[in-house]
Length: 263
Image 1 (cartoon, helix red, strand yellow):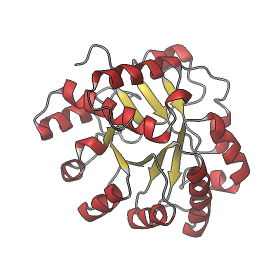
Image 2 (spheres, rainbow, N blue to C red):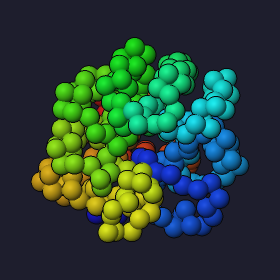
Image 3 (cartoon, helix red, strand yellow):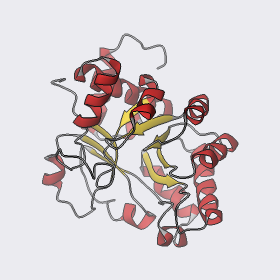
Image 4 (tube, helix red, strand yellow):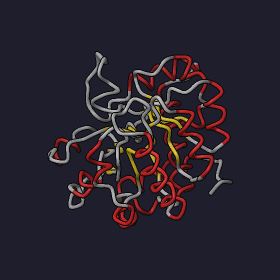
């Protein structure tokens, strides 16, 4: 594996009360999604160097929708490089009308403030893509993607990225181009059945599956994922909003590449 680039987990859930030393012990860069504005506000005073905390409103959490305020969200994202977890859920007890109202308000804010966005679309992939078509934004990552090949093609045309975890089916993995893919744990959900360490940042299992599928080495997969991340960060213009350690990793991976035409 690469001696310089750590694992990159683009979607996990971490308790806001987790000690800093325990988070640093993960040895990974982790994008930690929140389920509500209140949850995000509880981490504002943290100074974790390898965690990117996200502002979210989970489509399946009733209380998060009840307390969601568009102006408050708009203010919070001024200091956040990452938005997540947001989106739609076809199996949620929250009415789809309420979900769409919240999601539309979030998309409208993001159209004016580009951010990396982790979007939930379980049971509602078609409708999620329709809303993204109606209000295009940059930086969209379709988290735990389970769409059909046709929907995957549609998402690519919309400029979306995808994050997959150990629970992903092989046919889904095969349908996503390597230059559009990220890995995640969605801890503690996406790695529920994993026999390996169940912790944020442990993405080796899904990296290995991608390596086997594409006949590449683990190092090549890791480097590709970081290359994708550099492109995404610059696409959203959030590279300067990252912590110093993560910014240095971005610059290191950027310098490694000879493909600089998109900067």
